[in-house]
Length: 344
Image 1 (cartoon, helix red, strand yellow):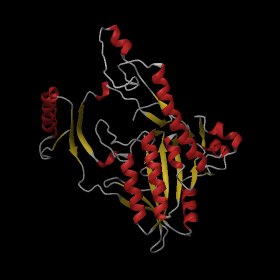
Image 2 (cartoon, rainbow, N blue to C red):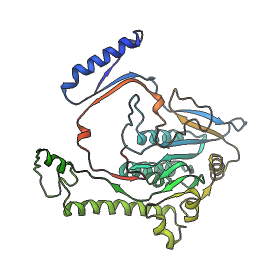
Image 3 (cartoon, rainbow, N blue to C red):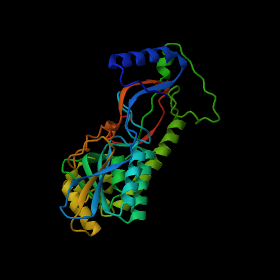
Image 4 (cartoon, rainbow, N blue to C red):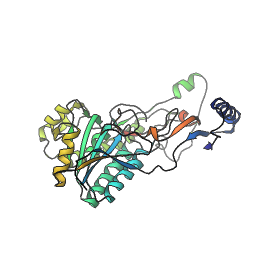
């Protein structure tokens, strides 16, 4: 990766022309990434009071957002580079754990889920936070809290959903692709040398055999069983005769989720705020929101974008970002707790 800093006094047209000329000149040098832009030097998490109790030295309840696809990687767009969701959650939980004035957190979820590993890692973070801090966690489901988003909600002490929330989708998906038939038609042939018959299972340059499918099915079943165990532990009140229905991969509204026992309450942000105070044993609290510098925070809803947006995209402004890599030509088999079969 090559990062370039330009004189900010130069005209914008001049700067962009220099960027494009350099990129075109170097595209033949192999895989590389150019990121040209500017960002504030101090990126430490900040807190802003979004609901003031009106009392001096009030305890606090912190909103911790998990937004967008759950991946253990930096989310990049055409003109921006966002946070790593796993790293961002860790930062916010650590800040809440170390702050004695924070008595509880609201885990605000707006996510269709994501990678199996990333979802489980974040779920583990939440468990460690609760164990180390003894501070209660209220999960608040916004537009979408499905699959890996629901997996993460299971780490909370109680779950609140809007009646219009989409949740559920408890299950695993893995999507494979084979380029071999198309390559055969145009006369391109590949040969992989492996140490075993299943080493290249899921490779886009070959076709799946029955043995490959059995290997992938074993992994899917293992990940699904792990998900079921998490749900059973977190939701012991789901009626046994409805457990299979609740966990068969279907998506449901917040109201249906309450009927199935997947959530505890139907409400909104202030329902979650009241519950957080009750669980913490406090009568009055300030509500604070964690965020990166330069993000405008004027209300509790300031950083609650749709599930397909990153709440951190405002923290860095890239004038241009160019990715030159062959990785997109080599799609990897990945396992997801994801409502939609979309790649992050």
